[in-house]
Image 1: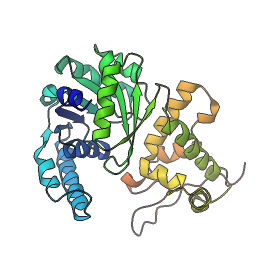
Image 2: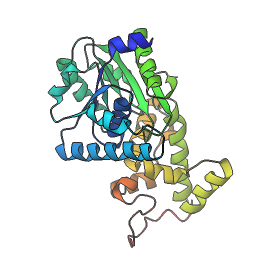
Image 3: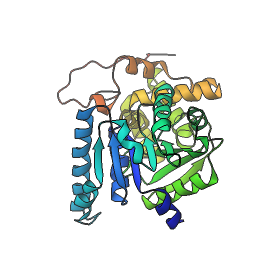
Length: 303
């Protein structure tokens, strides 16, 4: 299988220079692949390059990778301001906003410029791979690669096969994921896949627990950390993931499965409407701004 991988994949394109895209690009470069990192925002590309370099040097300083790896990996990384520069890629991994319409638009464009043998992968955490694949002329070469955040640290990857994903493409992507040091789990193409099908209802219930005044945010998180041995409480984790991302996934679950239990908590909707998206904005359920005096959004005091 290693020989099949080497024949199939030598250059990996990554679309999206945010936290996930930068992390995936770092993983690919560290694993020995040539990497083309694309974003339409040149400033985002510059930030991503700095983040990747700093991350690699931090890992080297801790002895987790050899001292030679940072420089070698950065030499394999190329920033691409135009999507046309990805035309030589053997695999392109999309890691942009969790919007089916925007992802389909990107896939349509990639389908036109990539060579016929290229594989298209999405880092979506909930959207149907089958529907994304339907926007292309290569449905058998479309697959889901759901990395966990942050990609260089988290050991898990969810691989999701669309209705038409071929056995050969699945085998190549599984081998690639293992070369990146990931433990692979495989999901059928249902809303939320495995991890978010279980995780998001828990986060949503934590919001309902806060919304209905059952307990404070601190007690909810402490209860889950010390009572169930979770490293982070559900509200802390939601802030880390991004409240907008959590809301988007819950809407996918609710629309796709039609069960009221996936209906997003009104308090979560209110936080997103207020722009309180979590750590990336400096405020979500918790404030991450030093000396902040921003008023908290108030949950309901009673049922």
